[in-house]
Image 1 (cartoon, rainbow, N blue to C red):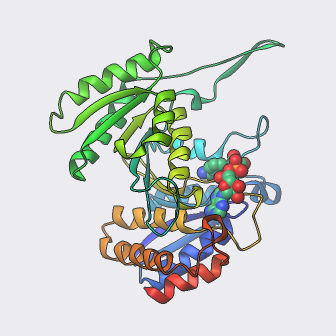
Image 2: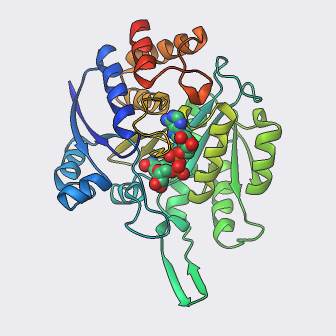
Image 3: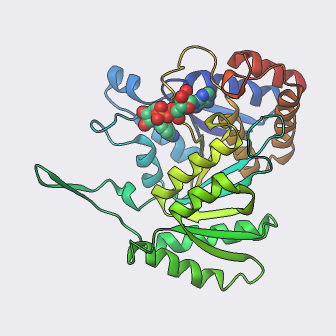
Length: 331
Ligand code: NAI
């Protein structure tokens, strides 16, 4: 048995976490859970967004399955997600977007993995009010952070038998910061002659993604572009309900859906738990539980193929729990 830490966040977070833990148990995942409530409600009741005991649990267990947390816009506390990524140096945010033939979209056969640098760029959140009408924001790009995410992208390509890595940047305008990222990409690419390497400007990539997404294999980019472009890739495969992610560092690993707390559908029992479930499968694979992850993925595929039990975001009318029970029945 392996003990992992689970954070139940805000909005749809608790509903999808309950569904996912039920499926993991039904699949016989050899896991025990230390479950914590984090976010706005926890703050109001106990004065901390993440309780000390929750940090301590993650530091002990090293593995975190996390559901989304609401972040106030334009004011209030700093994103807890950004805080966790920084505090535990979870530098590699990996977001695989793969078409499922049972989910209808205008974009068949998409299979793109985004490697997003997760610790710097504009996400350092350093802003300075110069005068009442002027604000500056600091963008940080370092050799250390760029080298490790780009190297991870090429290593992943090699290990998974992938063909191509595309560096996404805006070095035509940000000649020094994105220019550094691009030049490091070129240095590292030269060490992987078996993998095709190319670079493209981020605006062009967005256009190409909706015209001919099949040309892309692995994308690697700084933090902010990675956030935006990976949401775009979720749209290609049927929406945010289907995009999982891992956040990996040297010592810690966190797995979460790419989507947020979806306040518009919270509490209605219609959220799609697949993105969090597939994140849990990435966690199982990380822990070496390949067979259990495979069985869960297969059960999800079967339910989607049969077509009668889908959540509303992908064209069905099933509730979160009906979908969850259908997966369990096929395990
Ligand atoms: P969102 O991802 O929560 O929702 C965008 C749209 O996608 C909504 O229409 C929502 O209903 C739909 N959606 C998202 N996940 C879904 C699911 N599993 N099933 C069905 N439909 C789903 O983005 P939004 O509304 O911009 O952000 C809401 C809050 O979440 C904000 O406070 C934001 O800061 C936070 N957020 C947190 C993240 C995290 O904790 N990792 C990531 C992104 C946003």
